[in-house]
Every structure is written in structure tokens, then in C-alpha cells.
Length: 345
Image 1 (cartoon, rainbow, N blue to C red):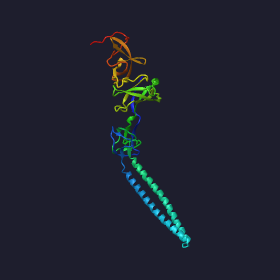
Image 2 (image 1 turned 90 degrees about the horizontal axis):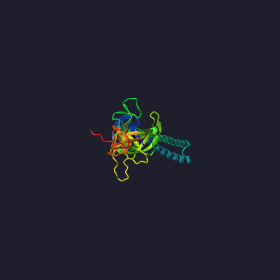
Image 3 (image 1 turned 180 degrees about the horizontal axis):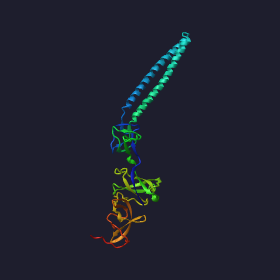
Image 4 (image 1 turned 45 degrees about the vertical axis):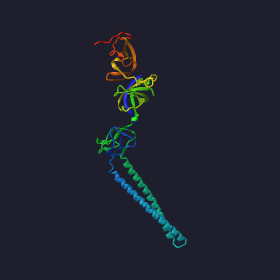
């Protein structure tokens, strides 16, 4: 029905960077390595933040000990208050002594509440320092494959551009290989021939004899005004390690009424091998492609469905079979049933 060209893309891809600016201390990945979500990729230098964490922990420890001291003093002041209350009931101490004991308890209670707040502040400071140290660890955001290693130990990295050429903005690029698909631009005049779920076949430029069954995921609901095209997303029916992001690909959209090339009603039958012919042998009559086949010394006009083109040859998906003899360079005046003979050297 329709042919289009595009590229293999990964819907899930990320250039991973640190949360803070710092010097790379260690890089633990290489290109082609598979990583899991949360796996450590790199570590930034922590010689400045590590002592700050130790200081915060010591401040917390001091605040806790001060709190414990005040708790002991408060317990003693409460016991002293109870004794003075009993003595006051027996009129053995003055009212002034009882008031002093109550004031001492109140002071210790206020001091205790203040120290509890100081302990909470110290705990928050420790958590903050630990988070700052954790921010120096660069981890994988999802399962994937490292396709680019962008920093080396000793280099400076930053989550934002520093405006100079000596600061990296990323550690590595990770691709989720399970999210590979195809994006093609279809001329807006023919987009009515495409619909979601439609069957398609893809041929990678790197493997011109390999036809990959696909299906239309959806049509992106916007058009490119300058190119007069509409972007179409196409998913692979089955992923293969040979399919790599950014590979060039040609896609043939199929009629849903028509079985894909290679389908065979006989269970277990092998797919028909690809047929490639010189591109000059394929003629056009409107939207129909056809070739002139020679059979029993006479010409036959045969409609064909074509696939990808490469190096002056076009793949024929249906209409002819391997071994058929064709007119390599058709000329004007050819007619159905006209007698022909092979050229002899």
C-alpha cells in the first residue's frame, strides 16, 4: 500500500548526570554494559562532604548527651520538689523554698524541650549531609544498556551547563532496549492509508535481505508544516539484538486484508526468500507497480508489491518468485502477450 523511510529509535533513553557539580572519582561502567535500575554507575569525590558528615554526627551525639544530662537533673529537681511539698505541709520549710524548687523544675523542663529541638535539628543536619553524600553517587534510572560513556575520572561534571568546554553535563547514556521502535515520516497526502494496528514490514539498511514484521502503534496527531509529513510510530512484533537505535529503515505498510510476506498456511513452512530485482525493471502506473515477466517466450504484465531499495535494487514482496525472467530495462511499446526472445551475446 505505502512505503516510507525512517529510523529505529528508543522511546526510553537517558543521559545520566550527577545531582550536584563535582569531580569524578570513579566510573564503573563501559559501553555495551547492561545495567539494572539503581545500579551504581559512577562516584564523585567526597573529600569535602565526608568530614562535614562526621562533624554533624558529633554535634548530634553532643546534643543527645546534653539532653540526657538535663533529663537526670529534671528527675532530681522533681524529687526535691516532692520532698519540699511534704515538708511544707508539715510547715517545716518556708513558702520561698517551695517556690524555688518549683522554679527549678520548670527551668529544667524548659531546658529539656529546647534540647529536644536541638537534637531534632542535629538529626536533620545528619540526614542532610548523608543526602549530600548520596547525591555524589550516580545510579541507573532504569534497566538498560550503556551506549555512551561520557566522563572519565578527574573530570568535572555538572547537572547544568557551566558555559565552558571543560565541564561535562553527563556521565553516560543509557537506552532501554525493550523500548525500541521505528519512527517514519509519511507524506500527509497518503496518511489516510495508515491506521493504528495496521501490519507493516521493515527492512533495515544494514540487513537488506531481512524482512521484519511490524505493526503501527499510532499516528502522532500533528503534521510538519515544512515537510508536509506526519510522524508514525511503528512497533516490532519481536525484538532482535541486531536492531540498534538510530539505524536507517524502510517500512512497507500492508493491507490488513493481505497476509504478510512469509506467512504460509502450512504449519512450520519456511518463509519465502526475498526477491530483489534491478530498480529499473519496475514500472509505475499510477499507484501500481508492475514488471514485465517473460514466460513461454511471451510478455506478461505482473503487478508487484515492493519493499526497500538498496544499491540500485528493489525488494519485491509479492507478485513474482525467485527464478522468474524479467525485462531488465523496459522500453516503450511493450504489450501483453508480445513475443520476445532472450538476447544472445
